[in-house]
Amino acid sequence: MQVRHLLKDKGAIVVGISPAASLAGAARLLTEKRIGAVVVRQDDGPLLGILSERDLVKAMAAYGATALTQTVDRHLTREVVTCNLAHTMEDLMEMMTRGRFRHVPVLDDDGRLCGVVSIGDVVKNRIAETVREAEDLRVYISATA
Image (tube, rainbow, N blue to C red; front, side, top):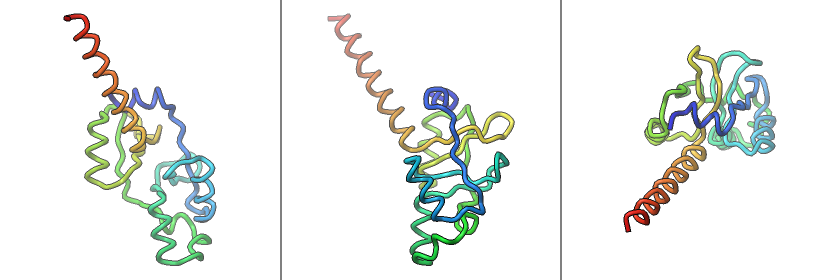
């Protein structure tokens, strides 16, 4: 399955935050939306980076509670691996495993941000594929018996 199909099923809502926002604001946003990462960009501008729960933990470990008053820009991950609509779930699994990250921003054919895929999305898709394959085998075996 390609990323384009996953986004069609899942939806292409992208939760973003300004680089000038505080880490406390970012933590609230992650909690409210029940997500593990947020893309960082100015309004609807280009992708500047991504801020994950891991980035928040690193900031807290380095600066303690005062980290929450610091800006997102100070702690975001700037070197973001992205994918495009033609990538497959297997491509994403390989990227995520190799890079040890759980969120991949998706760029459309014009290079604009059009979605985010999480490891949860990939796992959910893989489980659904496995269930379909098992059902197909059951039907096949029943038909030949």
